[in-house]
Amino acid sequence: MNKKIIIYSDKVKSGKTTNLFRWITKQDSVAGILQPVVAEKRFIYSIVDKNLIQLQIDEEQSKKLAEKELVRIGSYIFLKSGFEKAQQILKRDLEKNFKWLIVDEIGPLELNGDGLEPTFSEFLTTLHNIESNLVLVVRDKLLSEVIKKYNLEDKFELWKPALNDLQNLTENL
Image: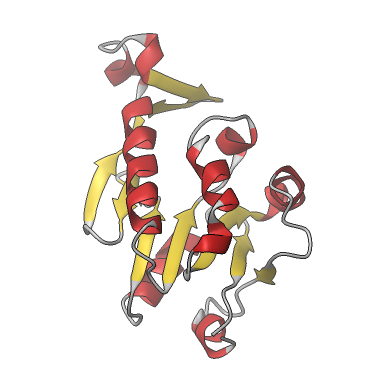
């Protein structure tokens, strides 16, 4: 099997993470992170550990923390510690050469050098040394920016779901 970089791109709130949850239950050797929304808050989900790490908090919760512990973008407030844990999970999973490695998602924070950065950029520079297929989740409005920022031109396959079916992803490998 040839190693691939696959970008899974669709609209915001179109079910990308939910579809990936369904897909990973039918696969062997999958690692990485998903970012589900639970009770209207975003979490990091470690695929290997099968646990949730709180990422998003509300304004009231943020008042109890120092500003340096937070990452703000628009009206969203995230815990810096959540992103740090996500980066640790990705580094650990990268070293183990799983068949599939999922990074959900590369978005506005990463484009601004925050969120999963700098780990994600470091991750891409070592990709040639691993066996894993990489699945990146990117919202459709940011696709061209992400491709440009990370120099992914001609290095990836774009996968847009047809009827929310991820089966094509596996069949084409």
